[in-house]
Structure formats: structure tokens, C-alpha cells
Amino acid sequence: MKIDNLIALRYFKSRKRNSILSFLSITSIIGLMLGTATLILVVSVMTGFTNNLKEKMMGTNADIIVTDFSLVAIRDYEKLESELLSINGVKAVSPFVNAQAVSMSRDGVSGIIIRGIDVDKEKNVSKIASFVTFGSYEDIKNRKENEPYGILLGKELAFNMSAAVGDEITLISPQASRGPFGLNPKMRKFIVKGIFDTGVYEYNTTLAYINLEAAQEFMGFKNNSITGMQVAANNNVNTIDLAYTINQKIENKYIARDWLSMNKSLFSALELEKYAMFIVLTLIIIVASFSIVSMIAITVKDKQKDIAILRAYGASASFIRSIFIRQGMIVGLAGTLLGNMLALLLSILVTKYKIISLPEDVYFMDRLPINIDYTVYLVVSICAIAITFFASIYPSNQSTKLNIAESIRQD
Image (cartoon, rainbow, N blue to C red; front, side, top):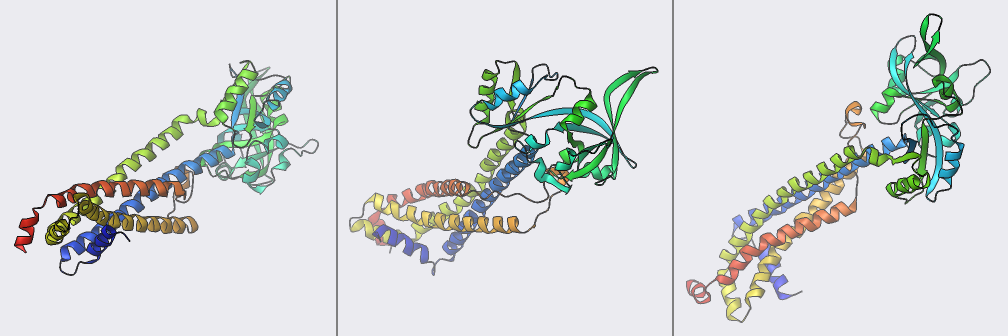
């Protein structure tokens, strides 16, 4: 071990004669530990919240949506489908029909969003099949003769309508038909074939799925028309670049938009909040570093004789300075290490056990999400150690300004 490290470690351990130094050392370590742990936990929670929200919202949406520029129906979509599948990076495509409707049951009425899907192709672009908790996803395409079409309802929507699997509900389309007595609303009966839970309250209360053929008939779409195409990208493919490639391929007849860009404002706000919290909570570590400044300053005052003797034996100013910088770094490393251990322990406990519950209708999740990312631990640790190092420089410089002869004479 180098002599300056040995002396720094000895100064750190030797606190019998000076209780103030012991107190400052302990408070410095505790302050750094709490500051580091708090910063890691807050960033982990913010990252976990963003990832959780993104994963759940992406579960019911494809990576890229292709629609007409004027938002009118796309006719004879098979040609568009084959063009999209020929593009490098496209994993799968699925047509869809979006529509608004009013749902009626024996116990409730609710405005909903109907999404007509190709049951077989939809499984390749979204996770809606895995979200079905009651009934069967496949049943909405199986229809007996003279039987109503099947429908999948969100968990909260089914609860609000008091509808269970096997119940019959009525949908009213805004596309009215003209009759002898004027405009008549178009009404169709559907049988509840399944209930899904996406984990997002807004989707669970407003979204319902039916077969593509049923949606086209219900909305009066002709010529095999659809609202748009959903596109799933291959793994490790940038969806922004892929959307640009698709727009070039289809020669701007339609518009392709990746889902994250369509919700850019939401996720940009979450990222900004995460960085803001990082900067604010870094102040905790800076405040804790003030204790290190005081600790080193008092140590320098207490060890004037030792410093004078070392200088008399030929120790350089940089050598003396390094002793006290290393003393501050010992405190910084100890506090940072303990902070990492505390943050990891709390993260595992909160992840494994539902310690902190959240209202699902507000936060889209029922528990506090924590993303254990060791990159965050590394970045926070580097910041904490860097702050500790800079905090140690000034009081360490004071150790080189002592009068050697005066210090020896006084002792």
C-alpha cells in the first residue's frame, strides 16, 4: 500500500481524541449513502414508470400505423399489405378498422371505441391476445349461422356495463341509415366472447375488439375497405427510420407514423421530469459533501504537527495534499458503496413484494415500478465520487500552506 494511502487510512480510523471528527465522518458517510440511494431509487422509479407505461400502451398498439392522408378508408388493402411486407425490417402487418360507437346492455350505456381486427394477423403485431383474462380471443372469429358476432370488452368497460362472457350487448353506430321516417341509427347485437385487461385504465374503459368483417359490415365499409394497417418491426429495428422507409416505398400515397412519435409529447415530458429530478436530487449529495469539507479542514488543523514533520523530512506539497484528498475519497467510496447496497436492497424488496400500492385508474399500474438498471448505479456512483473529490480539494490545499517551523515550535 502506498504511504499516502496508509496515512490517509490511519487518519480516518484515528478518532479517539477528537469526537467531532468521528461525528463528521459518520454523518458524511450517512449523508452520501442516503443521497446516493435516493438518487438511484428516484431515477429507477422514473425509468420503470416510463418503461411500464410504454410496454402496456404498446401492447395494444403496433410499432407503426399506416393510414390515408385524409383519414378516409383505404380500399382494396391487399396491394398495400404486400408492399409493406416486401420492405426490409417489417415483421408483420395487420389491417384494422377504428370506429366510435355507443354500447348498450341491460344495466348500462357507454361510449366506446371499436377496433375491428384480423384475428390471426393481429397476434403478430400486438399483444391483445395475451391480455384476455376471461373467455377466448379466438372466439370472436368463430360465428355460427344466424348468431351475432363476438366482441372483446375491456375489464372496466365490462364492469360498468355489468356484462360477462356470454352476455349479449347492442352497439349503435354513428353512421345512420336513411329510412322512410328519416335517419335511423344502425344497431347490431354482439355476444361477449372475452374480457381483456391491458393494464391501462383508459384502454380498459373505452376499447372493444370485434372481427374485421363485423367491423366493416357495422361501419358500412365497402370494397374491402379498412381504416389503416398496423405494422410490426423486426427486433433491433429503429421504428422512426422504418416509418421513413415505408413512406418512401409507398410514394406518399399514405402516411406511416411510428407509435412513439405519435405520443412523443408524453414520453418527452417523462424524460424531462427524470432528468430534472436527477439534477435536483444531486443537490443532496452536494450538501453531504459539505461535511467532508469540514472533516478534512478539522483534520488538517488537528494534524499540523504531523504535516510539519512530514514536510521537514522532505514530503512534497502534492504528497501532503494527496493524503487528505484520499481521506475524503475513503468517505466518498464508503458512502457511495453503502448507498448502492441500500438502493439495490430496497429495489428488490419493492419489486418482489407489493409494498407501495398505486391507484390503477390514475397511474395505469397497481404498484410502484422500479427498473433495476446497473448503468444508473454506475452513473450515480461516478457523480457521487466526483463531487466528493472536488469537495476534498479546497481543504486539502490548506494543508500545504502551514508554516512548518511555527507548527513544530507550538508543539
